[in-house]
Length: 113
Image (tube, rainbow, N blue to C red; front, side):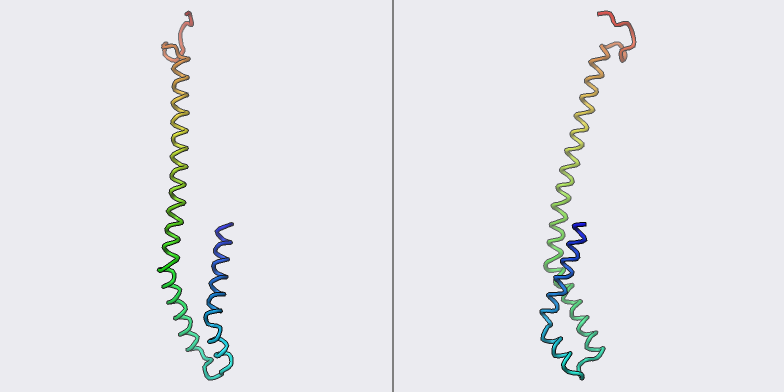
């Protein structure tokens, strides 16, 4: 859920930043009927797409890779700790089984001491 909220926040922030960046242009286009046409909109959208890709490659991609690397490192450490815990538990169970078997094939035999 946190990831979806993060995507929502980043998207809303991006839209707001684009609006603030092109606020004068949008006001000018809205005021002048000669400029308002579909070709200008297509050019503007291509420009926005190119700038978004450039921004992604410059800033966001590096941060995303670092974030992913840190999280994978934490997951790897957790998995290694679980593996160590299970190995120690199995070793302890093996010692208990050996202790109770008394050297007579798993405890099958007479129990005279």
